[in-house]
Length: 293
Image (cartoon, rainbow, N blue to C red; front, side, top):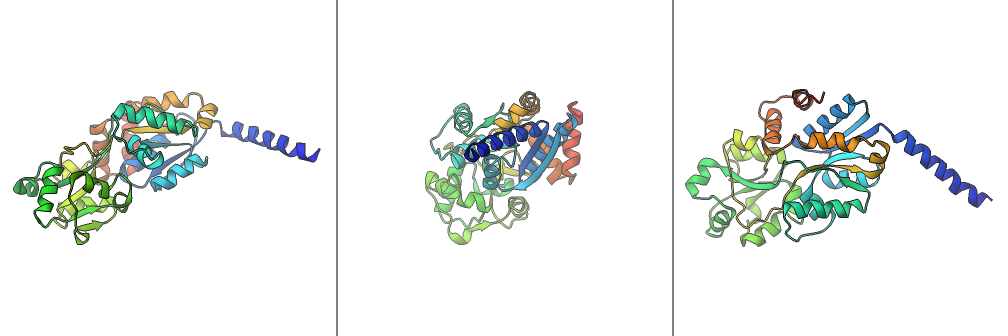
């Protein structure tokens, strides 16, 4: 009899836990400006709709993903390319639509639901100072590869994650057939790459396509002429259990997702990184401007 009671009690507790989860949403976020803005925006938006929101931002990608799979995070904004390559080990080149449908299907098997993607594609990119790139005649990554192979003294800055990840620096160099020597590579926090490039401490930097400092600092984004970088469509991802407990959440998040595109995200990011406004204020202003708060 005791062997039967324990499973029954576990089922009762699980049911009670599910009921308690209704209207209680844990919002996660990564550790750079765009993600911090999105986490704050989402938390304020859902709080205004009456949810009991717990925001946990500032996490690394792998840790955040694991936290969601473990049920510690209910909702955060993920990039399709990150899930495709880093979480599902697919290196095949796919169209943006194929990338989205693939991660939606594969992550769905883990009860993670990809809602409607935004039009913001925060893919990786390589950038140089406009005047330096013009002087060297570099417009594409192929031009950069040729310059490196010709012995130009070019120093490259990137974060530690890109240096190590499977769609990062090593395969990029293989694709374009060049190689930075070890002293030419400076690993630093993503936020430090932009001032380092602006101030001439490095000649090439890894940037995010929707970062507002690209235009503010007059950088030239090098054309990815071999189409190396996949699409990184910004999309809300929610646990199925959370959606079951909050039936209106999907439509509410899709409404927010529909408002985001490259220019919008670049503008929001610039308000934080260039104009030095607080993340909370930028997120709040956006929601009010769009009648979501």
